[in-house]
Image (cartoon, rainbow, N blue to C red; front, side):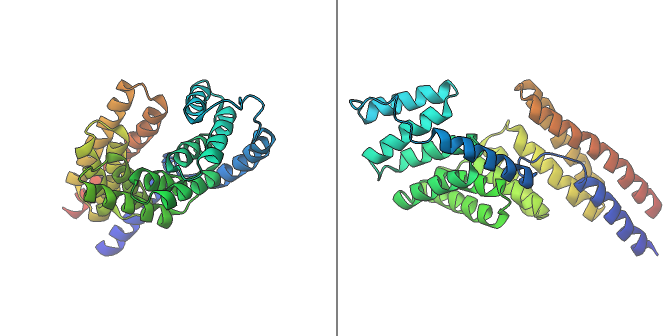
Length: 270
């Protein structure tokens, strides 16, 4: 009878947990695609407009103008400069990467992936392109492709002796979404070691610990989850990232509610 109660409890709490409306930056894929379609229509109207580009501009001039355009929010203008630069130097992987980032800002995720793929072909030892393509693939719901890219980025960084926090953090998120709690905790912990004050890594680790606590009926893990989420909440507020603060606040409140349910279940077993 106790096993049946535990099973029902597990299903109930996990349902509450995964219905918490926490934004991971990787959900609402249907809306992403709808927005992308609209952006592409607008994009095609502006693409290849070289009217503002002087025929006397050299590669460095174009790069400077592209960066100024991006800083001013003129992303289409920046893309046109990068287009021209690629025409001048089609084997420059860095320009594909820069244009990919602009495409990603415009929510043109498929085009961003294409740019990062071209950059990888030209320079397969740059881990950043794998990281960025992994993030783009995750936004489209391709968790397996994203996981592969992020693992490749991590492996390249290990070989170079230059580990980076971001690929661990995002791979931790993917493991969380795939419900691989222990792997998610390992990845986010590694990310925190490399970037000790990153609220997102603490957020994802806290959520992973919450899921694991429910599965193991462990109050100690639950308390550790709340501690991580509280730190993420305070740190995002300190950094002025109100969007992340609101996301973490929802997770923190959900964790407190789950803790109460978990405590009641553990009391029954005494």
